[in-house]
Image (cartoon, rainbow, N blue to C red):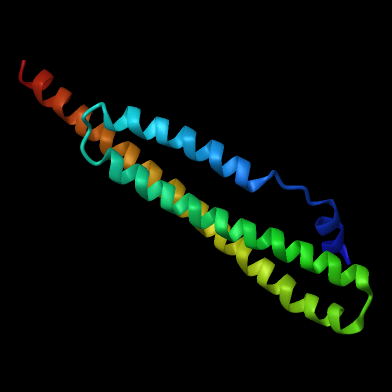
Length: 131
């Protein structure tokens, strides 16, 4: 089964250490953005943080599923092999969820970026157009 190769070769970083470092980095970045006085920045970043945590939750579940599929496969117990079908189907669904979540994040980021640019650019255009 090709999926087992993925499961046995899958190596993921230690999530607790990565989450802690990422959280510290994000908090520093969020503070510097909100100190700039831009309204809505903290809300935008809080939304991104929430969405990234949801993605990480699905990825963590996938890690557990892959581990279970690998263990079931190595056991060679027929009942465990049958269970792998449902586990692999869940993995497949989760991968689709992650793709969708990242697509939404990209769209939201693009929208927030362009709105922020338009707000700053709109002020500059109105003053330069009147001169």
